[in-house]
Length: 424
Ligand code: LLP
Image 1 (cartoon, rainbow, N blue to C red):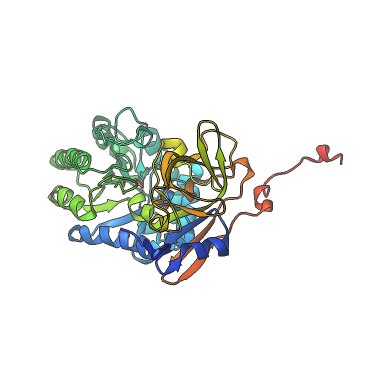
Image 2: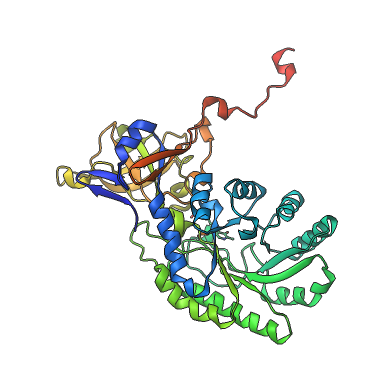
C-alpha cells in the first residue's frame, strides 16, 4: 500500500505528478511520500496497540533528517548503530529516552557520547562490549542501561547477507553466555541489564521465524525469572518484509496476531525496530533514460542512476520494479522487450535490472525505480565522483527538497593537497 499511483497516464506521488518533480529538480531524484511513511508507522502502532510498544524506527534504512523528524513527530523512537546516527537522531529532535543503540563495534567515543545523551539503552552484542560500557559508565559516574542482544539461532529465510540471528553470524550473544552474564552481573556495577533484544534478519516475509525466536526468548525470560532476575524490556527488532515483486509479506495485523500472544505472556514493555516496513514503499528513485544501446546479444537501457545511487540490485541481486512515468497501459500493445537497465558507472555490476521485460522506452524518458525508500539513499555513495541524488518529500500537493544534490565542491570538501605537491 503506497501513494505512488497512476492517474490517467501519469505516475503521481500523492497529488503531485512525478514527471513534474523530475523536470523541476533533475534526476536521479529520490521522491518520498509523507503520507505513506506515516501510514506505515501508524499501521504498526495500531496493530500492536494492546501492548503499547515503543516503535524505534531503524535510522539506517533512511536517515534523512526530515524522514526522522516526520516519524519522531508521530511518537516514534529511533534505533541507531553509530555516533553519526546518534547525532542525526538528536538533530531530528528525538528525545534521548526513545533512542536504542545496537552495533557489534561501538567505539569508546560513541559509547561515551550515547551515555552523555542519556539514551534509553544500548543493545549489547558481546561480553567485552558490556565490560567496556561498564568501564566508561564508571568513568562518567553514571549507570548505563543495557539490553543483551541475544542470538536465538533461528533461520529467517532471507538473503544470507541480511540474516543476523544464526550462530554463524557476528551478532548477539548465545543463550548460555547470556545466562552466565546474568550470574556475574553484580560485578558490573555501572550497568543495569534491563532487557533483552533480538533482531534476526531483514526482509522476512513470514511470521514463523519471529514466533520461533520470540518463543525462545519468552522461555529464557521465564527461566531467568525463576532465578529472581526480572527484566523490564523485550526488543523484538525489525526485519518485516515488504512487497518488491511477487512477495506476499505478512501485514502488520497478521504479524501482530501471531506474536502478540507470546509478547503478552511476560508483561514486558515491548520495543520494535522496523526500518524497511516503514520507509521502503514510501520512496522511489526517478531516473532518466540517457541512451538505448543495442549490442549483438543484448539491449541496454542506460539511465542516469547507478549502483552508487541504489546498490541493492548489485549487492543482493535485489528486485526493484521499474516503471516508466508514463503508464505502460498507454503504449502500443505487444511492444514489450527484454532489456538490461544499467547505470553510467564503470563496472559490469552496475545495473538496476537484468533481463527485465519492459515496455519499449525512449531516450529522454523518465523511469521510476519502485520501493526505494529503504536502503536506497542511505547506502548511496559518491563512487565515480558522482554527486549523490537530490531528495524530495511530497506532502499532498506540495513538494519539499529535503536534501540538495551534492555540488562538485561537496565531492572534494575534505580533501587536501599537501603543500609540497603544490610546490610551496
Ligand atoms: N534493528 C537492527 C539491529 C538491525 O540491524 C536492522 C537492520 C534493523 C533493526 C532494521 O531492519 P529492517 O526492519 O529494515 O529489516 N541493506 C539491506 C538491509 C540491511 C539490514 C540491516 N539491519 C537491504 O538493502 O536489504
